[in-house]
Image (cartoon, rainbow, N blue to C red; front, side, top):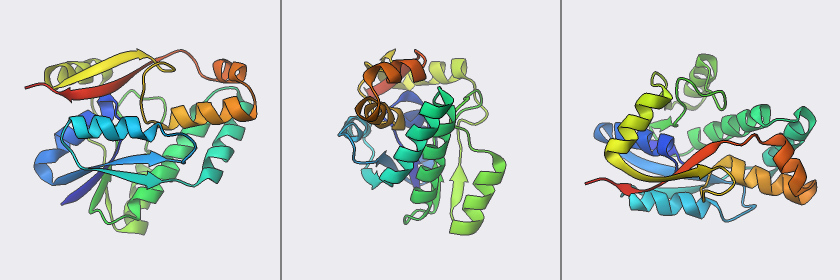
Length: 197
């Protein structure tokens, strides 16, 4: 089975790939709107854990719509959800038997409701896999600590290739850096730097 995993370079998407590697050929899919070169951080993280990596170009109009939503809402949840759903739709059209992501049980955003997963499977003839969907943050951290080396820190400071980085840049460009701080709460992110031996 050829499996494409939406990949940010962080702990969750890397662990998802590790959990799936015994079931097929895993390729890490680094999605980008082409607004920044931050997807390259994810590509380097993917190479550090010995998976093939593929860039996937997303529709810049979706990023702009997501930013308008976030600015209007004053928080990122709905905008990031819009982008994740677009990434799932885009990757479902590629030549994979299955697509996967690193969404976990206690994520507030993004999420993949059962109805969305079934719709993607039915419309695109591809399986949707969510290997972390039943696992909580503490257990994931334990699993990651035993298998991966990772850098963690404030989201704005950790080099990574997730949607948030490009959306932050777009908000800063079109509105202001201060607006970015108002919209995005402080939170911790990670970037994987290699496998533990």
